[in-house]
Length: 274
Image (tube, rainbow, N blue to C red; front, side, top):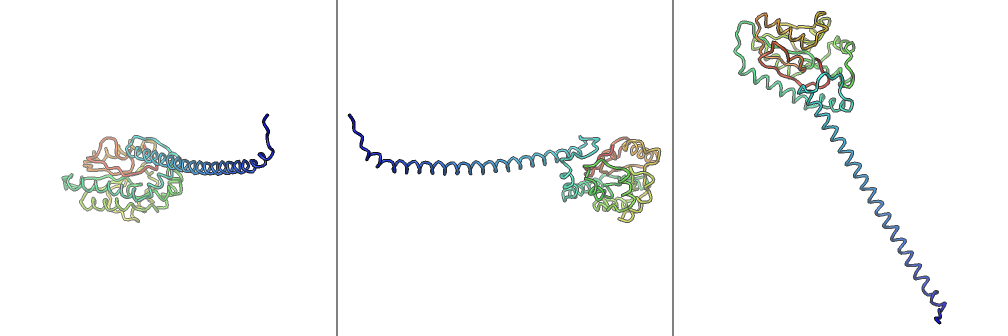
């Protein structure tokens, strides 16, 4: 028979206890290490996902804005809420100014070679008014940059204050065209009741010497803007004017018959007028 000595248990127990303690500490250390790495990786993934979402939204909103300018997106009443900040940043940025100035450069280039002026007082150019000659951005700063449906009453009350600033790049173009002896017609979708504050505003910021300021009468009030402006051009053509160009911030200012020799679109993605 085997004989088991008690002294064997006495000698081995401390050694086993020490080994088990070391294993326990090692497991706890490894668990803590992997937990920390997992948490760090999770935070990194969260940040990457957040950045990806922000980039995706920025791309979407810029795509929306560009397609407004291309006239692919039409008849919108408000800017998508998720894009309001993007439109705000653009319309108050140096990029908006650069885009507008580039459009004016193209007009200037066109004028340098396009036109054999008749010298008979019948050469004409048409300007829109709001966001072409003067800016409504101060109004829209307080009204959501297109995120709110345009309130005509509120907007007209602001227009009556005659405080819209000039768009400097267009002011220079206006003066240059006038100096060439071309007759300038301002064709606006503003109502006739706003004539006096509109004239005051334009003169106060440096515009003067236009041939005609045409505003919407009661008969025109319920027409689409494009139809109204087309009719204005028809009257001018019937009077013998040659319309060398139109510049405006809305497609409804540029489209329709009779058309001009050239049209030029300034950027504006805050609202759409049809």
